[in-house]
Image (cartoon, rainbow, N blue to C red):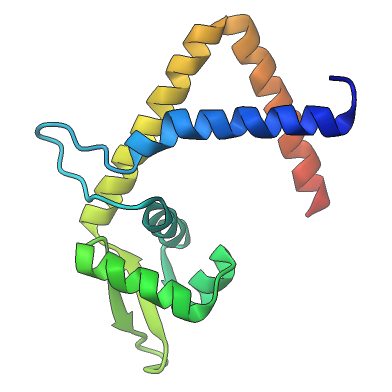
Amino acid sequence: MSQPFDQARFIYDTVRMMQRHVIPSAVTPCSPGTPALELTMPQAHTLKTIHQHGQVSIKELAEAMDVSAPSASAMVDRLVELGAVTREHSRLDRREVEVRVTPEGKQTIDLIEAFILQSIAQLLEEIGPKHAQMWCEVHMKIREVLAAQH
């Protein structure tokens, strides 16, 4: 596996395996006594994006997610129905709609993130401290390269 394309394929396949291992259960992290909203992966991604921005217009959300404004608006409509976000007209420009995460949406984000982090922590324990440290070092280098590109 010395060719860059073969290495890229191996990394891609491994990342996909990790996603399948960690993400499916994380989207609805409901356990007895733990209230959480049932979300699809796109809904969870949209909710996380809105949360990262604090408050966002539909146009800004669409740009952040690299989707059309109508697609972003449809996703927001569903999240409003679920009680995960609020949608209100801007005080500065009534033509613009501002979207914010509700407390229930925030709680769901926190539960999903905790589940994902726990799953990754378990993987790190299984591969051992030496390999976990190596993995972190590789990811640090990747972050440096990506940061330099932007």
